[in-house]
Image 1 (cartoon, rainbow, N blue to C red):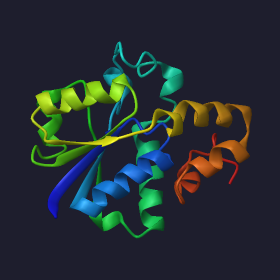
Image 2 (image 1 turned 90 degrees about the vertical axis):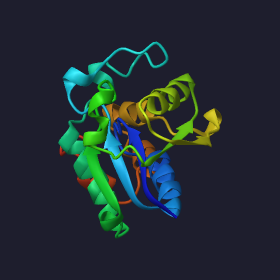
Image 3 (image 1 turned 180 degrees about the horizontal axis):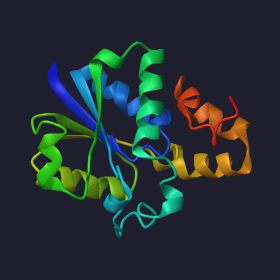
Image 4 (image 1 turned 30 degrees about the vertical axis):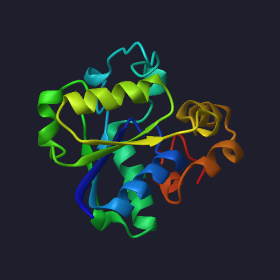
Length: 176
């Protein structure tokens, strides 16, 4: 078993696709670092392979709101002792080792060009990376979840969130 692993993402919001990747990492590592990218507006940078990443409408939740969502999901499954939630400024590779040790194997599920680029970015920054193939036709898209939030369509978004996440949502987004 690996001593440490990591997963990174914007988690806008943390959904069942993220949960599944976390669980894959947990089967292979004792501790998993959950790195929240785009932790603040200054870190929102345009990227050719993911045109929406830096847009305000694609980043409605603050770092702390995302941390609370993830923590709530971990507590529902009693996994909080095996995970560490940290900011992960993807735009500042020199800072990464301050948040996630460089020996932590990064697990990345690749659905699009963005995730393939992310694999290269993490490897260039010194991380070992485990690529998990993803089927783009079955990817859970946070954009769809955010749109369902805006429409007030709880029946569409709630099933796409792990247990506990809805209770950690900011009041402006949740009907619970």
